[in-house]
Image 1 (cartoon, one colour):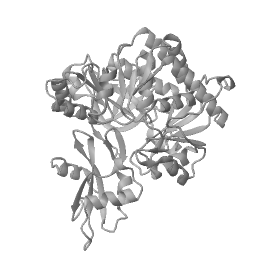
Image 2 (tube, one colour):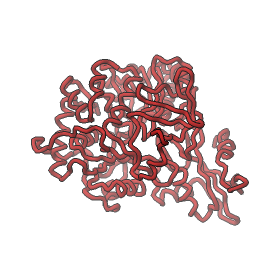
Image 3 (cartoon, helix red, strand yellow):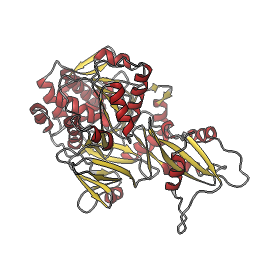
Image 4 (cartoon, helix red, strand yellow):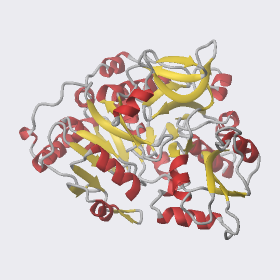
Length: 502
């Protein structure tokens, strides 16, 4: 990390980081979307006006504000305005529906809820009304506006909880993850340091900004002073126009993104799909070594993959100066300040980027050991060079395109289906998605035939988000079970179906 980035990384709060970057390079662009370009100075000034507008609406330091918005300039401005006020914000992924959104709003006790109106065929405002959400307002292309002179002083404490992110674990209900400005700055600093970036780079945010990776990426832009292209919806080849127009040098997001770029490259052999692209980077899902090798070989760019989670946005990251073998087979090394301990094969973490726990104190107590290390539920080992190799998971959670999916949530819903006696939901390896969702159903005697279409239609009717729907169905006479407690042996199912493709 260069001296300027290191100095900015010492900022106590996210708003202090915004202010300091705006003072250094006010005219340099930071957000690019279509024909729009916003500089660091404009980012600061417009966010203050939005903060004043929110203040006029009744938002105060400590007020809980939920927002469910796509990746847009307005979304970043709203989030920074809330950071300027010292509000507590709880971002929701745009494809959350009544079930997940309602739970998050209730548990966080949100007093305001910003939505995009109707977006991609779904009416978010109507959903908010159905849920009885408080303080609903639309913030797709219009934001509150006011006179910054009315604002109180910016928050000075970066260690208070001001962010509630949501993650699905081994339980049906999502968990509210508590973050501070400092933990988010630490995570973004880890990412920026590992990738060896400079002010000459042009990044891209092709994933939901409401993901924990949103502020992670923004911190990186603020530290190094370079811009990023925002994509409201990522699809190839459509996105290539924006990448080429702005000369993107850094792209990615997760394994699914690597595979999409690779497929596009294969459709145009001998022609670099993004001439300026030099690096793909991401995390959030397993990365097969062959994907790394194919990207380097066929696209002529470097690929660095990392390990992070909602609780710890950046744990390890591959670096462009790592060896090809380490880049292909490991998750990279932890940055300074991130302690990794392997206990009985489980990866445990301690450091500034680690969350403060969960909304539920019982979940917090269970998640941390007696020395303050977070139990990740992931299995792994450290190599002699300090690189982390992940070998499996204790958690019964599926990671599809970088998003956590609770197997139990889907199982609980399917258990009520009349053609299901018992069910086990597992993740199967998938080169494009990281994992795909497979439902293995034990059918009761005499029950009607069950199809994948019937299963997904049923789950949709129960309000399950589209990204959690099974992509494969297996119907069996009996699920494999242990001899003592008769628990379903999911590892047997994974072994049985991982090698077969349907």
